[in-house]
Image (tube, rainbow, N blue to C red):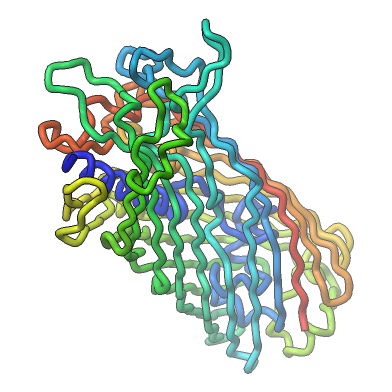
Length: 510
């Protein structure tokens, strides 16, 4: 019984670390930056930075804008599937002689809204403030099946799902409120800095193994030992900063640099577990999982620390000015310090280079308090439950362009991006998909007086992560003789993903 207690606690630890990482890192299930115009340009927006979201993505550009507010939403449609295999390349049985899953299993991921809100304020020709509220450009909710239903010799059969030890559910919210300032040294050179007050909420569940197969026996899953673990936590203060510089040495050429640093997510975690989750036939045990004697409720069970990788960008932008163009009154009011691309440019072309220090995600740390019992056993929660990842840094390139079809009325845009993989296939985990990414995007802006209405579409192709069945991750186990890990690996096989986005937003200038 003590072993089962250990298993429950460690299961929650592993799950919490991996899902939160997916929401944060540039190498997770994520496309380039949030923002409707950014989406339509494949993320190549660093130098252009012509709406108040610059408060986060390039605060130095705030002093080149009029005052304004912007709001938008990206509706994200994620497809994510996992085909589990063992070292022989076969799909494994869930245990007790049941047949393996006949095909890959996919998450039930609903369309996920990803909103943004920002404002900029000019206090002087050479000084501006900005505020932005945004989330990571990722899907924060995934639901994977507890069981799968398929036909066998007995008819339609319900069996435990093959991915259950990695993830069942994740419902996470991360916010990045940012307050920034921008100073112009000259008309051609400006600097910006912003303070980020991050907020993270974690809510997720998976299965763990209570006891492992005996030493010397064939190592395989056994759903009769499974226990469901659910973990929650909130970090109300994740401090960070953004720094940038913008330089326009020529009338047709500008360049910018951007850097982001954030402290780690640190949160106390609550743990709830349910034993007796499956019947002997492999179905969910509706009659037993909610019995009080099967439930462990341990508030403030431990402390979780997850590093957030640093990021940096360098951008180059060429623009073709429009002859004898005149900006809108809201731009002219600032004495020539404000850029107005939809009025004064014919087209632009921007190239951005990106770097994410994803190798910082080598491990996540979780330490439990000593002496925490788990009902109905007399066992105790372990004090050390760190989780390894083994990610590597990611490099990327983005290319985007706007063409002004009708000055002061209509602009069209397109873009593309590539980011290298951060994945270590040996530690494949469906809670994230840090493979290489290729994206294609397009969009438009329509101007109605002082209001610009933008829309965009982007498709992201993710490369597959495939370890050929030779995964190195093991399910958490309470069996001390097996090192508190299952004897069989549980992450062999391959995972695939793709992402479609529709975005709509507006920016008002004044």
